[in-house]
Amino acid sequence: MQYDPTLISALEPDQLVAATMRPLPRRKLSRGVLALLIVLRVYIVIAIPIVVYAFVHALLVPQ
Amino acid sequence: MSENALDLGFSALPRSAEEGVTYEDVLRARDRLKILKARAAKSSLRLLWLLAGPGVLVMLGENDGPSMVSYATTGATYGIGFFVPFILLTFLMAFVVQEMTVRLGVATHRGHAELIFQRFGPFWGYFAMGDLVFGNLLTLVTEFIAIQAGGLYFGLPSWLSVAIGVALVIGSLAFRRYATWERVLMALAAFNLLFIPAALLARPNGAALAHALATWGPLPGGMSTAFVTLILANIGATVTPWMIFFQQSAVVDKGLTRADVAQGRTDTAIGAVLAAVAAVATLVATAPLFAAHVDVSKFASGADFATALVPLIGSTGATLFALGIVEAGLVAAMTISTSSSYSLAETVSAAETVPARHSLNLAFAHGHLFYGVAIASTLLAAGIVLIPGAPLLAMTLTVNVIATLLMAPALLLLLLLANDREIMRDLANGWRANLAGGTTVVAISLIGAFYGVITVFPNLLGK
Image (cartoon, rainbow over all chains, first blue to last red; front, side, top):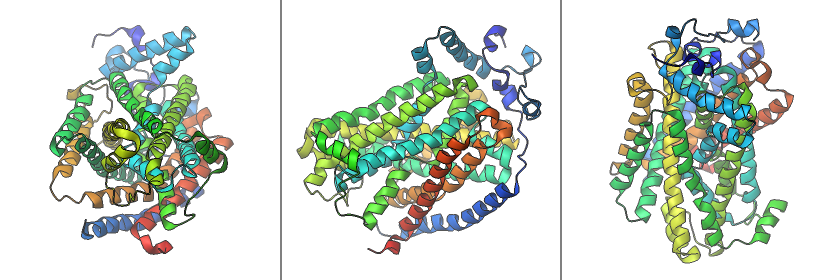
């Protein structure tokens, strides 16, 4: 590709697509964060059926 | 740059020009060059103009079709009183949440969906993306309902309004240039302020507005289930998951850096103020319906409000109101479909299943998935609206439940990321940000979960 190298220097190195495509490593989770994420998973397990119920119930109610 | 940051993959400058510079980089560099020149010239207003966009768009985008109907219902049910300062408070909460996405974007140069995937793993990555894309699809349906309803006010058949809406949403992607897309949307979003002249035509009582702001009252009818529901709906109309994903991705796509945090914050604050003024104006514009004791409980769309307002604020005011509803649906459809594109392409890219790029600077040839998601979700949502007998009410209700019930995971993940010092370094939340952000996140999460539950079980609080 033809481009002016000085133009690209306007970007910070971290901003280049090549740099952003490099994945960040997994976060090392503390016990507190781990516990919070487990609670969130339980919350989701409860929440998703409520969403499904809401949709099905609304479908069955005459509009 | 710290060694820690280097280990995390930052500072990956290509060793040669051929190695990694893409056309997307070249376009972003052109925008950055203008910013660097404005900064060197100490032209602070031009700098703010160049860096503004994501914050204004996300806030005015959230003033979408259903949100404006929610504010209109509030004005018609309670008049000018408690809800005027309350709406301002909800936008303050939105600012606290959205400001974190600006810092996340400039610190990591990664979108929200890919950051969740990379830092918390595939479960949360796929969940966050799936929840967002599905919720966004249903929200898009409600935006096209708003466009259709606004069109009906002007005598346009449903299919024509929806077709024009689809053409404009898909047409906006044809720029293949983030900067152009952003400026066009900002121009369109300015029409959200049409609610202000509509409110002025309602001849609002300045003393009543000042009294409401000073005393958080009056509150006709006192506390009731309807009041609580409206409070929760107003919060749901101000802070939603797509805003978090959209603004962080837009900040990255625009190319903001750590040097631009102050302007990013100002952009978000300006957006919050403009959107709050438009929201309060909507409430004020419909307050005459409260004074005239008009029953709005059967109103299904913004067009019903516009029609009912004709004898009270005149046809000009009602027309401005209906135009505002169309704009609200249109701009939201553009920003929400784009947030789906960012989120899905970022997740696919993070999962490294197929190479997927995610930017409005991409050519179509390099962004099949990115553009495909926005186009497919727009066509699908528009098609659903036009299906005779489609369960639109069920979808609208489900949108509210998804947006509110599943807001807690989105906000808590945001707060965890904003406290992730490995990636945020000096931009991580301090104690003040954690106090404001934590209080807001806990409050919205609890209120959102409560709203979701009482939407499903409306008799929980009694009649």
